[in-house]
Image (tube, rainbow, N blue to C red; front, side, top):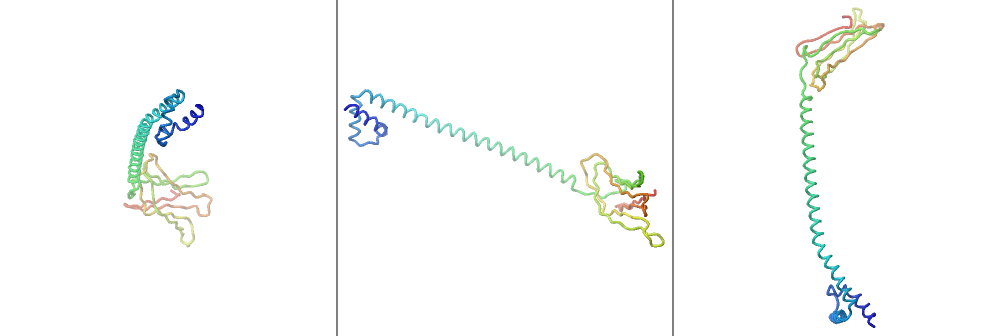
Length: 203
C-alpha cells in the first residue's frame, strides 16, 4: 500500500512543489512526506534542482545581456570602420577626379612632332609631356595636287586639350604609311591655343 502511495506522491511532487494541486492533495502529500523517508528525499532533490534552476535563470539572463551588449559594441565599431573606409574612398575618388578631370589648353610647349622611318613605313609621331593625357577631335582630308588628284592625306587635330595623369612616362601616338603606297605622302596638323604645328612624313 505504501509503495502505491509513494508512486502517486512522487508523480505529483512537481505540481506540489509549484502549489498547483488541490488543498486535499497538499495535505495528503505533506503527511506522506512526514512518514516516508524515500519520498522526502525525492522531494528534497526536486527542491534542490529547482533552486539551482531558479538561481541559474538570473545568471543566464545576465550573460545574455552581456553578450547582447558586446554584440552591439562590435556592430558599432564595425559600422564606424566601414564609414571611415567609405569616407576615405570618397575623398580619394574626389581627389582623383579633381586631378584628372580638369582639362587644360595645349600649347607648343606641351607636345612635339617628329618623323621616323622603319623599314617600308614612314611615321609621324606626336609626343606629350610626362604626366599628361591628350584629348582631341580629328578629321582626315585628302591632299590634292595641281591636277586635282589625290596625292596624300592630311590629319587635322583640333579642340586639343590635356588632362593631368598619374603616369610619369611620356605618352605618344603615331600615324604610319607604307612607302610603296600609291600616295605615301602624309602630314599632321595640330591646331593649338597659341598657334598651329604641322609636319609631313617627308621631313
